[in-house]
Image (cartoon, rainbow, N blue to C red; front, side, top):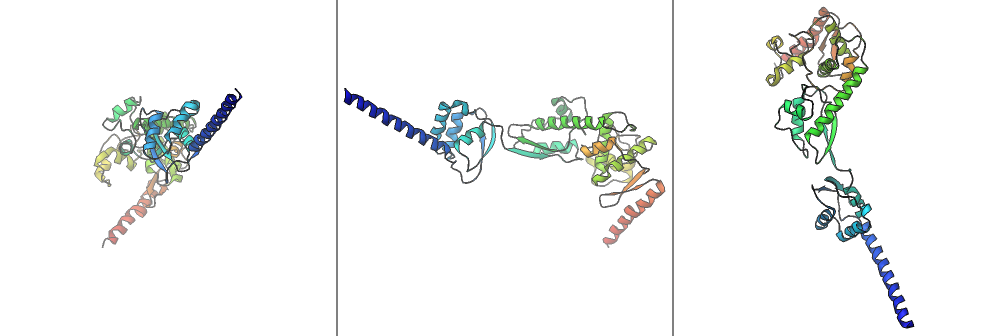
Length: 343
């Protein structure tokens, strides 16, 4: 009897040692770094389960011991989140536990999409259509259909999307970016309007958005935004036409080839502020935060005119006589120099 008990004790001890050794080995496999010599972009496909992902990574040689992760899922299920659809950046210094945590997180690979200030909605749509890894739901839609899709069908699209850098990941669509940009512009416009000067020559946030778009398109030097806003505000107060070239260009649409002729300045389009009174009917571009703030807080002064100096800045004038002199100085003399350089 004693010999039997002794044998049982020996077996128990051996079993415990084996179990301990197995546990240590299992833990060592979980702690082993991934079999990578450089970062790898891995995509978890739609509907993939944990074992499917582990088996695929094993076949690809990323993890040497898929069994260790499957044991982990059974032994410690609370520490094994389900993998989420998306792209993940796997690195050589990552171990299996870190891999599991990563694939169940929101730490997916993202891509930037930058919409510059002063762009039109058409330009933004072309950018969205060309963005890699983004689902293109609106590519064949009209502008009206796009606006209806994001529940903004009562609005003309121009100007209503805030120019900024947005980040997206696999599984997102162009409508996600459009909704973000639309909500952002609504918030920015609301904030600007609430902080507006008392005596503006327009009465609604939408008119401020229109004004901001004109400022954005006319401004080559950020410091001039409020000064240009002041010129436009004073012209509106005096009943003078705004006479800003970007509105002519916008009204020409696809006909614009980089040049504005005298006939273009005289053409009556809904946007040509050389012909129409007051503001154009809609924005002509997407203004940024600074342009919105300038539109509702124009700089005081007496300037009623400005002309480009050729270096991105403008010369401001308080009288037509001074303005004509500036035009002769900065525009006509420049044309003469250009003509002389061609000889």
